Image (cartoon, rainbow, N blue to C red; front, side, top):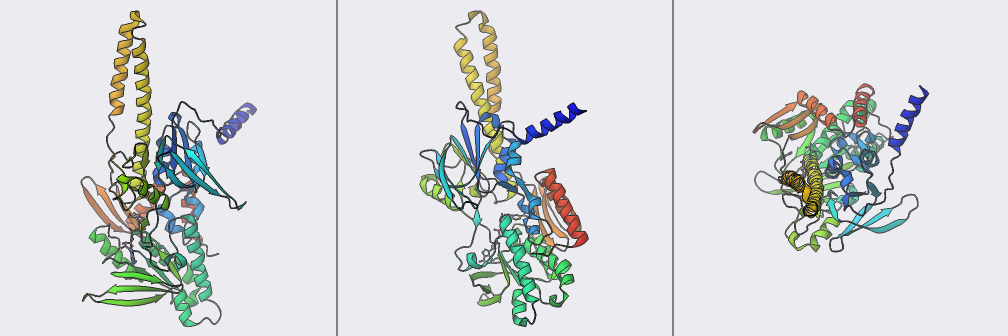
Length: 492
Ligand code: NAD
């Protein structure tokens, strides 16, 4: 018994303490991966790390399951439930992978080095250095688009990272508690309890739905005296919300929002933001424009993606990227146009698909297959070359060697025959509040559109199954049960 306990303990200890400080093998190429998002983590999951000296660089030392991020803003889900440490992910690889928590600030494609910067919060120091690469995968994602609209960065909250969700959660409660303060001015109560969401894409819609749920299910019950003042307004520049969904689901979402008392202002473009109000221009049915001012307590800005500075900088240094606007233009093998050894995945790459998690993870999995095949190809070519050179030296074994060469050549043809990247769309899902969701699911050659409570259960089970690990799945299930039974935690 003691022997078994000792053995199991050693196994656990050993699996938790892999040799992370491996010395790079000079016979292998160095593959540097920038980012720890959907694309790069899908790549790491399937990559055979024994073939390369793999180095991962990202300022975020965890993978974030972004589809459930809106649920963190109200406490339906606690933020750690949707985070998976990159160290845990890398520990599961056969050969050790180096990880540097740092921001890549520049890619020098001439010298084949990446400049990285680490800001230590504890020491308050900044360290900068360079990392050389033979092959590079850029998966740094995108930043929030503001279109240069004044006041957005200073006054609005975004919804991309864990820190954003935490900030929103605090701000909601700050607005609510300040509105409930003794002898608060009625006009100020209205302003504080007006939650404005700009951008009617899936992020804005899901957040508005979660926010209204939080209010209906928890805040109303806990602070009834302000309950008739809380209001959520969603502003969208286009004629309707969720433009990437089918017409039927757009109508369903808009009518559900009406029932939930969420105001939708379509054909309304925000032009300016101050610390207390949003100024917008609404297009009227007769074609005329009207200026409107909406006082707000919380402003969440969800108007899509913009290119990150490191990507912009690389694009300006590669002439083949001159015409690309939305990110790094890649070919059908995800190679950055104008380069031979740089690949891009996810929201920073322009491959002709929407910037979604689904696209990014399929791209990452494709690259893993490509790199595994490239390593196999090189190994087979080396073996063929070695055998061919021995052919004349060992005349007695010539027939055997020739047969072996033929066999390797057959294998080589098979691994070399890798098809270009093809995205297979499984469908789109979005939560719209009051335990309803919409789904546009790819079904054989067509699409099935559905909305309502059953779709919500499907949405929950789909997202649960997509969570990164069993640990994440259990935590999310626990959070759902906890907020259903005890209500959401409204402490700040
Ligand atoms: P988005 O690009 O899908 O939508 C942004 C919206 O903001 C647009 O409809 C645009 O018209 C509007 N807008 C821009 N400027 C405006 C202004 N000044 N005033 C008012 N409205 C303005 O952005 P997103 O929702 O963050 O999504 C980004 C990407 O991620 C998309 O490809 C989306 O499909 C994907 N995504 C998908 C899901 C899901 O499937 N559940 C969830 C989140 C994000």
